[in-house]
Image 1 (spheres, each protein chain N blue to C red):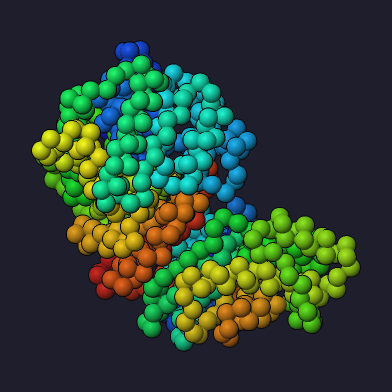
Image 2: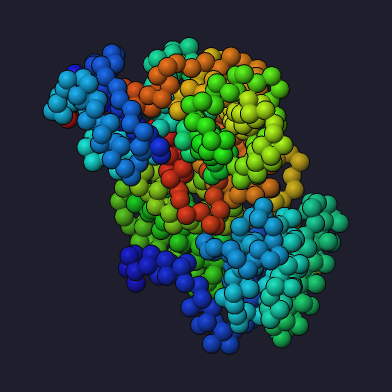
Amino acid sequence: MNKKELFEKFHEIATHPETLMKRYIDEGKPVVLVAPVYTPEEIIHSMGCVPMGAWGADIQLNEAKRYFPAFICSIVQSILELGMKGVYKGASALVVPSLCDSLKCLGENWKYGVKDIPFIPMTYPQNRKPGYGHAFTKAGYERLISDLEKAAGKTFDDGALGESIRVYNDHNQAMRDFATIASKHPEVSASERSDVFKSATFMEKSEHTKLVRELIAYITEEEPAKSGTRILISGILADSPALNDIIDELGFTIAADDVAAQSRQYTVDAPDKAGNESNLDALVNKFCNMDNCSVLYDPDKKRVNMITNKAAFAEAQGVVVILTKFCDPEEFDYPLIKKACDERGLPCVLIEVDRQMENMEQARTMLQALKEMI
Amino acid sequence: MYTLGIDIGSTTSKCVILRDGKEIVAKSLVVAGTGTKGPKQSYEEVLSAAGLNESDIAFIMATGYGRTTFEKMNGEMSELSCHGKGVFFANPGCRTIIDIGGQDAKVISLTDSGSISNFVMNDKCAAGTGRFLDVMAGILMIGVEELEEYALRSASPVSISSTCTVFAESEVISQLSKNVNKDDLVAGICGSVASRVAALAKRAGIKEEVFMSGGVAQNGGVRAALSKELGVDVKYTDDAQYMGALGAAIAAFHEIDKGLQSGTDH
Ligand code: SF4
């Protein structure tokens, strides 16, 4: 495949995950849906299943309203909507981590709304760093394993987990390398960049790593285009085609991101196991080592400085916070991010999005004003 | 040299012609916004008021919600930047602009040199916008321009929800059925817009002098309620509705100036 074909492939996967899902099921690989964020996909992968991201979709909500109030994030609402409409039919289970209040409600509603796909909770501790945080996380993983054994009819093996950890660490590195190279090559548009990240949530990771590596090789050979106005984007999601088109039309270059569905999830690898630790212990350490995310409890909010430092490192001239409407973890962090950006003279704008947004004109005006400010 | 700014909003179209980026030569306002004949009519009216032809205009800058649709434009700029330029040009002491338009509200913070340091816009909701006042005036069967007169007569404004236009509408209807004094009801409606916009303004940070721009600025009821909510004097000028178009005409002048300095021709 040449570069253009690779981008087309990423786009196809990002926009039609159902085709991929059918292929995996036809190949005899059970598909396990994973809701955002930080589901231990390595465990699912090691058990011979394919974890596929369930981050919802830009659709109108009808069915989900039977269970959810209007004032709740549209990611969880649209996951339930897709489930109730039968779009995920054939999946063996849905795993939902407990990292925000909306996600907690999703699992409970799913049990009633979607009877044919079992819901598996993944309960994480608030305090990850102390020993009891590790023990709690490990107990959560063990529960996940036993639930998965029942739902997908597969067995767990710690040696196989070691191999899956390697696959996931490789993929993390490939995604970090892609973000770095895309930052240096402004000809990679926001839409193309988004497709590469979005396809990663659906595709089996060793397959995806291979494609991303091929793409990186092509981009590396090219002479970088002239940079547009450089921005750092932050938020949970940044996959709206209309918003990415506006970013491209206005001549922005995404210098870096702190987006949960993009780079944020690829920052921490599972470490090597130490002494007589199991691979499962290594995976527990991965989660406990994580930081810098709105849904990971941190009284010091180190994330805020991480964002401004990342912006400075990537030579971003502004920060765009893409806030998923009614996402309280992100809403709590925004004033701190804004203040830190103001202190550093870094223009920062807030764009509120949801999965039912049909008109992006206000976002266009705000982004255009940001560009005019810079 | 003449430059023209056109501000195509959701409900009105405004034009301003400037001479040498300094002096307002003519302005026009047509109550019909984007997607109507309003922009064209406003454009023709301003040219005729200035006694100029299209060929006399060196640069046309479009702004406002319909800014990308005006065929004759040479460039387009966001209404946030244009309101900033326009208000600062007319009132150099201004540091905070509260702009309430037909379908949105914005708060813009300016630096001492007039550039934008921060801005916030309301979310997608008619509450706290001109549209809210239109709906309420409709229920009360009075003209929007009369709202001020009613509000300023009120001794004890009733409290009206600022969260949602639909809720507020039913509140107003129930107040009407209780025969509440219309002056107090209108003052409550103006207060509702003010409290919604004041929350937005506090998010951006208030620094004096505070000016209102946009169509709702003409409503003394909202201005008074806003001054009270924010605890500062909220000022306005008669030309408040033209600030976007004025800013666009200034930006158009800067474009020409930039071109002259770098040797490019427009
Ligand atoms: S977007 Fe926010 S509220 Fe929604 S699932 Fe993610 S963290 Fe929770």
